[in-house]
Image (cartoon, rainbow, N blue to C red; front, side, top):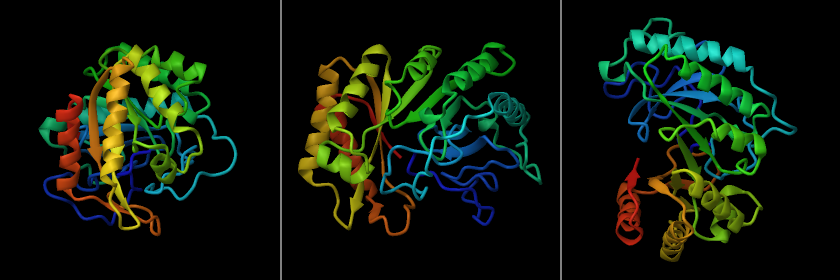
Length: 297
């Protein structure tokens, strides 16, 4: 789950010229259950999101995450038909300039009237959705009918589900315009375990990225934060750059790297925001030392 994710709050004041109740990073569901809107720096404006993990189920327990722990048991399936209805309504609403489920019907800026992406994400890990393939097939069908301006799909994932056959089959429905945003928040196993709360070998994480990257271009999302007041060590950043170089050498096609930091982490997590200068410095090294496109948000 993206670190900037926060739960919707009607008490949040408007920011700049953003529409009321759509502050950066906030999931606005209105009266919907699965489909939300969010202002995203990486999406460069309004993003339409599909929540495939409404219960917050996740196999990572990232220290910076806003969701306080994954609930026990297997996640429930998602009503693909109900989700499709909500997405259709949302796309029609945005095209007309009015958000569905907003009591006062706030108008959107003209430049946001044609959203370019639908993000498969949520309050947890989307690939844990037991009917992930059915959902993707349903959404791809909506796009194929051509009733709305073309939009691309973006899957935001920690990558843990990429070894499952149904997830691989679902990604086979993605076009070259669609993207997979994969999490890579560390350069060493020690840092990975410290941040993610996962016990799986770091080499397995890198192997999954390399495997998918040889099949299609991927985007890496890397969050860097100060932990217990300490920023990432220089050696950790160097190791991270080494991982990127290694992935390239293994044939992974990395379209770009997104560098960001925690905004509002869970109380008591010990994770705090890194200054913009530090994030920009990491992005600069990615560009100069690894030769990959990098952006900061």
